[in-house]
Amino acid sequence: MGSECLGERRALVAYLGRSGICGKTGSIQVLGKGKVGRKPVSLAPEDECSGAEGRLAHKLFRDLFANYTSALRPVADTDQALNVTLEVTLSQIIDMDERNQVLTLYLWIRQEWTDAYLRWDPDAYGGLDAIRIPSSLVWRPDIVLYNKADAQPPASASTNVVLRHDGAVRWDAPAITRSSCRVDVSAFPFDAQRCGLTFGSWTHGGHQLDVRPRGAGASLADFVENVEWRVLGMPARRRVLTYGCCSEPYPDVTFTLLLRRRAAAYVCNLLLPCVLISLLAPLAFHLPADSGEKVSLGVTVLLALTVFQLLLAESMPPAESVPLIGKYYMATMTMVTFSTALTILIMNLHYCGPSARPVPAWARALLLGRLARGLCVRERGEPCGQSRPPESPPSPQPPEGGAGLPASPCREPQCLCHQEALLHHVATIANTFRSHRAAQRRHEDWKRLARVMDRFFLGIFFSMALVMSLLVLVQAL
Image (cartoon, helix red, strand yellow):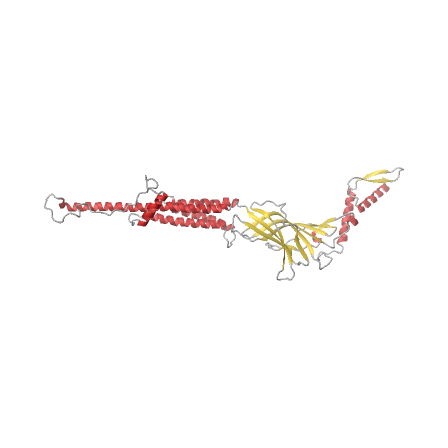
């Protein structure tokens, strides 16, 4: 009696597996024979149904691939174009090499098409409407990345495809792509880049394989934020091009990645030090000439800017367009060079010495007069705005009674005329003293002129450095 019930139970499970009832929740009851009344027997069919489904899947696989080949396009009519839908999901920006102009991305690529030779009736296989099989067993479109920048040959991902009963094939595969991207660094570090990824068939023309994007662009739902770049979008555009090698058109899909650089790190590490150094350079005009550090400060600032310029040149591509920060460095270095040259000129004016010629009249009137009052350059104890009026150096005059004495001999025995040698020496000492005073006045005038020029160029170069720094920093806002 037990063997008979077991046989009926197995027959019922096989029938339910063929009819698609297996896998339902709940218990199945089988009526056993051998008594007057029927006794319900509970049955948990999970294991039996899964086994039945596995046997059906194996049978379906054998039936589908008995006469199938993956070498030819799966279309019923050879003149008919096979439509392939391409969907891209951006997962991560791995690297952006500006110097070599190569963009490395981690993408999820989904391709969908219809295989005319992989269809079946779900009712004939227990309601089985989809199976997952290795992608190498079915025909796959040869869609590649046109602007690939990797020396390695393209490798196909060994992921499965989802095959549905109506012939729809979906192939999801991850990919790390290295594509060429034309990098424009003219506005670095406040630049924005546009990098295109062009996908298309390598051997099939538009009459055989048509590629179309799914949606208006790539999906950014699973994107991992990048510390250097901000993604603004990744729109898709379909093009149909005719190349010189072939007469038939070739459709492709281009996903344009819109990037904007996060400039905070570059502002802190490259821009702000240059701004501070550029504001420090004009202070060389404020140093006293006697300190001997005016030229040393200019040379030190120039060397510091050169070091930052070399650091910037190592990371930037050798392009014709100079980056914005590079232009700022060049302008600052030019300004420091001119300020150092003017400092040397002012030092020469300051140390011209007592033997120098008098200050020209126009410089005395314009620089020592109006400009000195405007810049508040004054002597010690002199109130601002009331500079000392320029004085003309007095010419040495002979002492009274010296050269103007009568040439006739004096008849008085006690007259001073008998001491002509003494009077001549006194006149020489007086003339030397007057000449020394005049030379000292000329030297003081040249030193005062140097201070006026120092104050004037301090305001000019400090204003230039401040304006250039503000123009560059405004770009960060």
